Amino acid sequence: MRYGVIGFCVFAAACAGAAPTGPTPSLSQIAGGIATTEARGASELPFKGTYEGLETVGTVPSHHHLDATGNATHLGRFTVTADWTLAPTGNFGTSTWTAANGDELSTSFARRGVVEPPTITFTETHTVTSGTGRFANASGTFTIVQTRGLSMPYNNSAAIDGTIDLGH
Image (cartoon, rainbow, N blue to C red):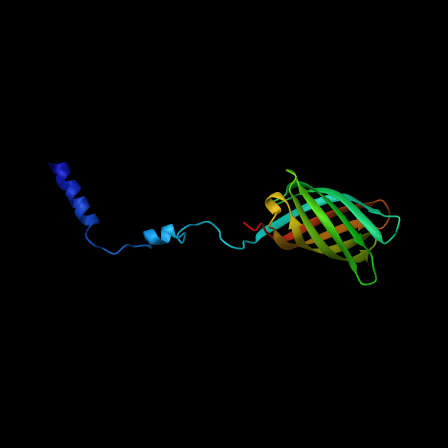
């Protein structure tokens, strides 16, 4: 009998009509997806990493090529190939970033350099142009600060910093 009275008191207190102390979503809000915690729409994520590689100069001296490997957020261990042309109007190029699972991220970029012997430091501003796999709907921009020597072979090391939106 005592447990019945205690149970009734707990039930009565719960049904006393007191206002809730925190927001409680209605069933219509839950059904409409309002009360979910899933990210919706654009969601910029940090994109950071490093790489090292070898820059070569083509048969036309204004054409340069980079093959590098590194590690970055959202890519994991990756390879990158980049091609650019030195021109009086600026240095512009494209790159393909391949994640460990084969998904690719493509960018276009503008490049500028500062010579401070015995090295040169380049700053590249990349814009994501397309992708495959989990990068199929990606967008974003990031900066690469790359340092290399002034004499060949050009061994490059670089730091990556920016944001990426995976589009899902």
